[in-house]
Length: 404
Image (cartoon, rainbow, N blue to C red; front, side):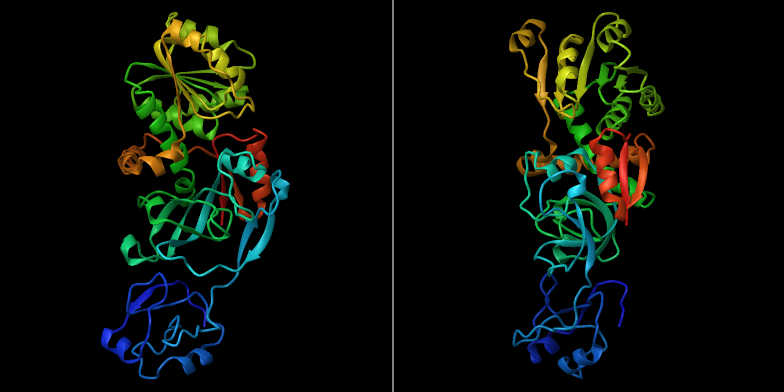
């Protein structure tokens, strides 16, 4: 019997107690969990009492004796697995047998997954957080709920976006299903597409916390965004404009400069052919940028200290250049500016109460049309290594999305 989804169907408590039935793991007491596929309904009928109110369902997950129903299980799913660290070519497409849904977790049928630079670093073993091998990469997904604990407030079929933690072979995004903690899940607005949802959380949360909590960007200030055509940079341009700032963006080609202008930047500079330090000084009348948003590091950070305003703030977001710069603290003192770091993931552990208000504010901006993920490339799940290579080599703009 083929069933389209998984759900919980309530049975009378008196009946369950009479027949000594125990609830399926992850389900509310006195419910029957319907699984995605049952290969042998006749076998199940022999194990389910004939007077069960849900006799035709497929199936009670476990009987009172603890004997599992052997022939009712989730089908294998396709997933890109990392078994040894390396480049995008180290990914292996496998058919993975999903484990039973862990208590308290939510299982999602993945519809879209985003490629982020941290995915590149994790696959290579260079990220600050190193998942235990084997793991499935991909920290951001959107999709539909398959199963969820009652306490989560989520129901099968709910459209959601989620952040993942790579804990085993069902918690990465480059797969057909993914398990996520309820606290990392957000319901999608009705008009939001799965592709937008997959590319939304990480870049906009990073931008919101970087610009508003760390840099305290104010209307009328000048914001300098490096790598403005990238995922993180494109979000910062939009958030800067929404905050009422004058936005100057840098990028590494004329085509990417054009993207920055399309995203709303007031000025866009090709840092390979223009001296952005002199240009920023010219645009600001010699004052410099009040806030510098830097996901690049290396020489870009070093040069940014030459065009930072009095009481300016440099927000260190990452090091895509490959070189971690050293801050000259004497220069920080003499010019009276601040250098602040941003590791957004740390907020999920140290100050999780700050994330829901940011999420509400960001979704309001999305629904008002002020922010929208810039998606340059859409590829199928089967092309995950190609998508990862595009981001690793700096050949992409905005977000690269895998569709499932």
